[in-house]
Image (tube, rainbow, N blue to C red):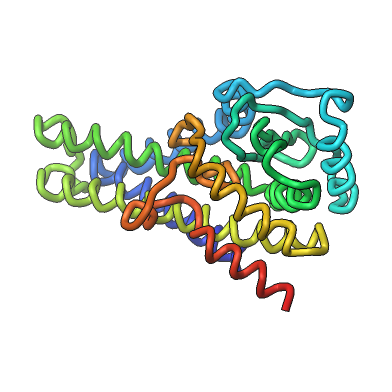
Length: 281
């Protein structure tokens, strides 16, 4: 069900992207929107992993530098029938982790130095199991595509509103772009909808990775206990994170409470823990 929901939401994002293009310049705009989305996703597919690792100054580590981490990653990758991913370390006391890579053959797991000091071996296994589940399900690619399209909608929407105000868009007689109010409404609604769809995709993939990671480790308590510690740790020590990559981390590095949390790319921690604990009953 989660897989179906994800692809359905991705389809909605693409439709929104085409709608924004049509609102700007009609039929040609819809075609241009599709071409632009394809170009952006091509770049994201091939280079997003390298970009995000450089963004956080992640350093690839050898087995001798982090023997326990390597052992856990190797053991769980073998159990999941995955190739051994590259292992990276991020110099930060904020405990967190993420996986990246376009497919299982070109994957990487990155953890902060803080997570190594915060979690026990079993809790670290729960976290790595979660990240390997993202790799196995190719969530990184799905998340990258969703973020790319949503980001493009937001950017084009901003350009469209300025263009509509100054009369620079909507020359195609088949579009609604000649109507200033129409363009403003469509682009604003599309931007909000794109954000909500991206959040729904990210949240559904997190729940699925939690479940599959817990099954891989054969004890949901490993991840549940790890999430508790990570929640407290990231609350105490924040990670300087780029909002465009926040959805990659196991714990949202951009903390928010109350109404702010409604717009988080991650499900509420307590709900994730509750679902994991229900698996032990």
